Image 1: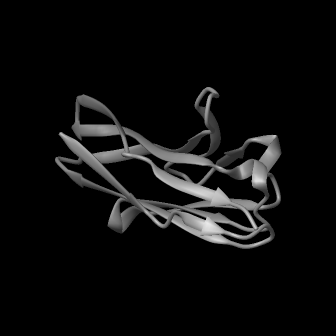
Image 2: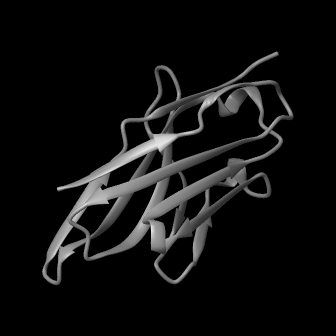
Length: 120
């Protein structure tokens, strides 16, 4: 079992910055993909950014140039640096990781979600 614990959400004014963290613990052999998703009130959960084991990244068009995803493999942690935040970035942010608990046993785990509110 792999558990993900997120931190870093909160209230910020438009134009401000926040850094989200998501740390994995448990039986981990390797972690391939790490993701950040978000879900605004009344809307579907959507992909914000993903990073591969090799460091390749993909971003939603709405956050390109403002958000940066990164990972620390030694700490089994993924980060999301969010700059120039806008009210439309308000949502609950979830991390997700895909990997292996042993050489042949895959896992997919989600974090509990951390709320981000962008408002003056």
